[in-house]
Image (cartoon, rainbow, N blue to C red; front, top):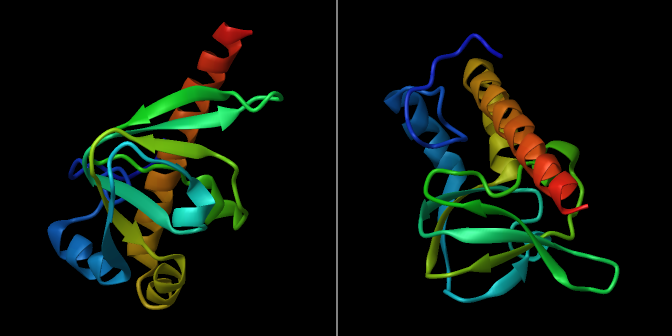
Length: 148
């Protein structure tokens, strides 16, 4: 739980005003991933934050015999995976696009530079990251527990 109020449908920027969003968008770039493609998260985004602007995709892990196990589906406004940004580590998660996927990519280096002069905005972003990561971990854990 946090002290901020949701302002919009973008999970990463949900606590920001329009003016703050415009400021943070200087740290972003648009990206398109073709439809019907399977990719590893760290090969496309590494430690950057990816928010879906249009389209949908699904997250998978591989089991011990390399079968893909579906974990979560993502749609417009959702963050794909926050942990590499927070932990600074690679991940072996896979994503499958169903149609063209339009992404707004928030570059880690740019956000770190932005943080030096915009601590309140960044604190709102970290609150949103915390919310999203907690909710996602609960959903994924419950799904995995049902499968075992």
